[in-house]
Image (cartoon, rainbow, N blue to C red; front, side, top):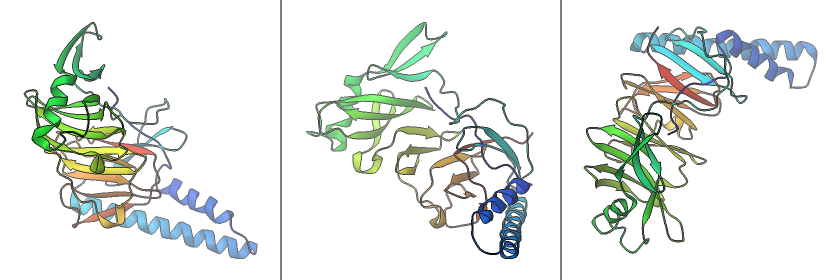
Length: 280
């Protein structure tokens, strides 16, 4: 039932400059050299932020990025101006969004309502196992599969992360409609993904895990990521899904969804995770 909520980290342009100054202080040399170094690094960060503001404004990207730092404190900035915005006062390491009551229980995909007083099986473990075998080339790989996470894609469709019930364990992904598997990805694509995160309008699905972020479309087909953002650890979409944001070690990259080779805006911001909300 986990999903996308909000996050924290370095705060706006002023905070970026302060972080750069702290980084410079860790170097050695004469005090005059360190002072000049700090000024140079801070100036570079400011120029990078100004460039990002200009690109975001020209492209028409807006809203609020809420993000977390390594201490799981939540912060927020406005787009396109990168100005500080109000953020929740509590700590949280990962964002969440409603799943429409879809979850998993004992290997089944279930719907839970009324405070989980009612549980209805949507796709059973047996049906999932049958669907993942012969039609999609998984026959003989496993005795069966059990759901470990599920999300509704709307229109009676569900995306499911599932583990094989026999060893060696294999984690796979399936898209189901009407209780039938209509698309799937095997273990070598899914890898060690621990979470599936759908986009707001369910046209994209991200796989998150220790190996980073993988991006799929609603039919579970793999999508390319922009070259400079090849090793992201977090992802978010604008509410209208026109834009995708990828977080790497020291930056957040924003690009038009479905166009990884077009405009790419680099925001010099280090985040642990992030969510993209509508403009205030």
